[in-house]
Length: 345
Length: 265
Image (cartoon, rainbow over all chains, first blue to last red; front, side, top):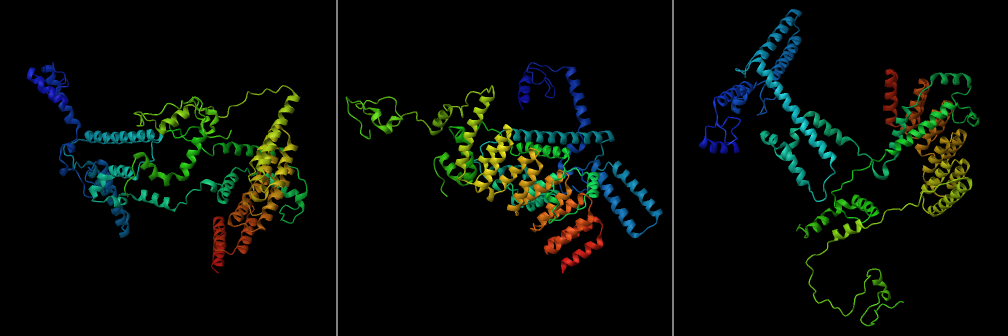
């Protein structure tokens, strides 16, 4: 917009075309060279921009058989056509097999499919003006855009993760709801859905992930972390590390008369010679376990921007503990105190 | 002095005579000065500001004493004596509550000093004295692991034996015992321990541990016998299902079907 206002000012002074790249310069005067450059740029743009983008959305390219037909913003590309052709070929092949035709007909149908694919591929149904090269370029651009979007999303997510969390005390669920609405609002409206029916937008995979989450038992926390089940699971993990020495086992089997002894056997009291390396193995395993125990609890990120409410390190630790215990109950009271007045509820 | 009213001597209040004020005031407030302006000051201090200032003024936590250099056997003995006194005090204080952590810290210090006999005696005292031995299994586990770390296998076996005899319902003791025997390669011993455990009818977890142990050494018949015992002593549908799954994994579909039909009955 700035360019245009400046351009109008400049035009009052000299001949400066609005499409010229130097139009932001108020003292620029367009010459033949500028005119030539403008024409070249226009030509280049025309070559690149696919025709589908110039057309109004009502006349978009849409194959009725495409699975994305319900999406009002979808434009069918070569990929879509290929997919449609494959689907048609698959269903046709299934039909032919059901009918129990002979090999000749199958070959015929395959030829048909190949022909269809070529047709679908070569059909410039929606793109009468685009050549092969232009369509390929278009698809490359689509891929690049998607990659760029994915990269940006990943960047934003990582930044959020790295920074310490902000004040979550006063923030209510409203903010999360608004965020969510922003993200899926467009899709909701296009399908005529309400926020309460937002689950209708889930694909089957995401729905299955959600079901799995419901069925999963909540992980034990607090004093329950070392209950019988978790200890047993830890033992099972350790058994995976046991090296089974079959030949020593067989040798012992032959030498020992009471190899399969039961509880009442008196062999137990007898001192048996244990080779040194086994003892080494045992000690090593113990040391490994102890080293692993160090990483049991991870150190949390220190949030510098948080309000200071303690005079001491001990005090800080205590505050963390009581926040854990009573935080969710005192949230209302704390918010009222911060605000200065209580809300009438 | 127990007097609470301030003395009126020339209008000056002795701060020391008023015990409630002595901690707060350093300056002596002349009594003649009356506060004329009772309106609030323009700049008020907030609680947050007070907290921040207090935090900035705090002293370093746990100021450590100077590092101690030990040069010679007598100094070492002195140092050990001092430490032992501290530990004994801690242990006496902790004897009232049921946590064995004071004992364990003491014993581990002795272990680090290399004195196995003393460490052993500390553990034994802990076991005999406090309720920690009877109530929880942690003390037993620590003791046994100490023996294992010090490579005293027969001592370790002794400790595990006692632990398992006193607390047979704690699965962790059995599991660790069996794991030790297996790591040492004493498979026959392990089998015997498993047998003792099964006499207590532990539950599906215990039984399947036994069966998996047998399978690890390729003893399929024994594993089958284990499952048979499991199923007879635990006539729950879950037991039958596990047995059938085991047979199915082995490819013995007939037996699996037989197992399931028994279960249905």
